[in-house]
Length: 168
Image 1 (cartoon, rainbow, N blue to C red):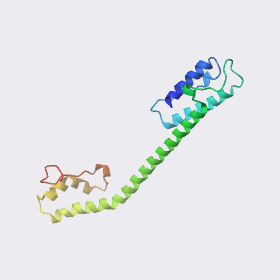
Image 2 (cartoon, helix red, strand yellow):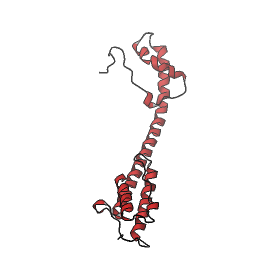
Image 3 (tube, one colour):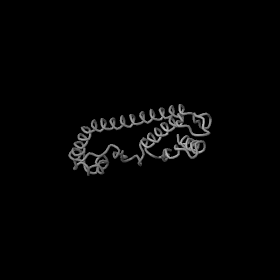
Image 4 (cartoon, rainbow, N blue to C red):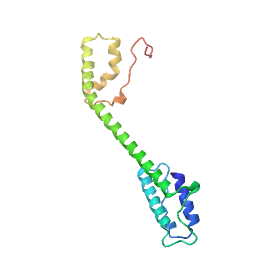
């Protein structure tokens, strides 16, 4: 869409030089601007393009409709704008679904985490001192005294003794 904004601006300035439409040209958003800015700019462009195509009162030496390079018309722009809006809606829904999925996953993990804390605390009473199992849990024992649950992304696998840091 960004090239179309440039083409539209060039067509308006070139074909309607000195007309009232120049002051109404929308600002082209940055490539990395939010989708809200893009939607607003696209709607402003479509609205101005429709007004230009009406050409009332007529601008001398201009015969509507305004077309861009390759015969690109307001109908093409509106179709592309609608497709982009649908893509943004699909992306937003996917992001929301992913966030809700993480919330459900974290809620399901909460009782597992509590059970793991109990296991880590119980290991000290059952496993002999110096055991490889006890050593593998040593780094995670500091968090057992806290009620704060770690994020699942913070959990890492720790190699057990005898594997040289590699898993089979």
